[in-house]
Amino acid sequence: MTRGPVLVIGLDPARIPGWDPEPVVAAIARGQARFAEHDIEADLCLLAPDEDTTAAIVEALTRKPYTCVVVGGGIRKHEPLLHLFEQAVNLVRRHAPDAAIAFNSTPDDTADAALRWLRAAR
Image (tube, rainbow, N blue to C red; front, side):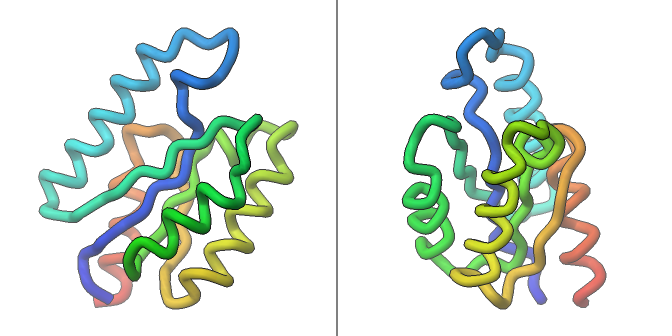
């Protein structure tokens, strides 16, 4: 396994009603900067729960072969989005079967989540 590319699947904070997106947008930017520090290409697939998430995830997964896919904590930890979490994991298994699947806690530690798998596979 190489050091990338990585796909990050998460919620789009600008498209979640009732949220102040700025803190999360800033955290996502910090997380992306961490990938750059490690010279890892990282693409984002940011979702709104009211959109066709299946199509968005499949389109992102089939753009290129990913070494690792990180599923964000906003999808994984928020119980009303359990169906979206299951959908994301199953779509990764189907459309990127060779990719490691990692999970972050916050946007700030997304690179660390991917690096656990990228380093382990060396």
